[in-house]
Image 1 (tube, rainbow, N blue to C red):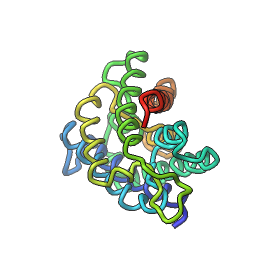
Image 2: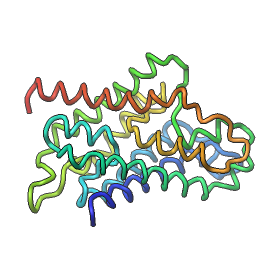
Image 3: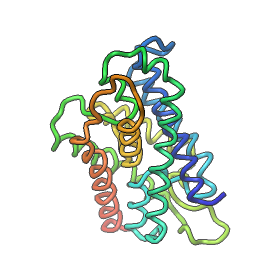
Image 4: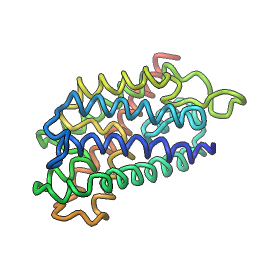
Length: 244
């Protein structure tokens, strides 16, 4: 499979399942309505597992621009491939969240609260304090990228080897990593830790004909975009200073 196609499919599956669990927990008249952070964090972790299983052998399963940037910053990924990977991740996220919306369309229509309708698309802070919200995204992504960097052993151009990325951890360990980040650090902002995961779905929220959807809150959107990128840069800097 072409690595860019793998990133589209892997990220699409991540968002189909991740957005789907939020919709299932929050939207009206679903059979899962009323669930909380444990259900959502667990399902997002397992969604990462699914994406890594599919994309890992072909693209390394970055599924996240912060992963791509972090690996490129330490010389483990070719910068020339980064724009294509990031574009594929955003496209995949848009497709995945669009499918999740269609799957739950009746429940979107049955839900009156615009905030609940927006939640499956983009993250939002529990308490709106942009500097601390930004720090939360930096911290969560820092943990994600640092662990990946210390387990990413080969370069993408190495022949006959699996490309590096989240898949270098193995699908099960990376699921546990995302799970603990969500449970430990996700209560402040909903832990985007992935610019594509937030930007693509937020764009789809703006585009899709969702009845009574309210604002897409683009004034907050820079936090889950720049925060993860900064977190990846900090992790890469520490990795380079400390040594591989």
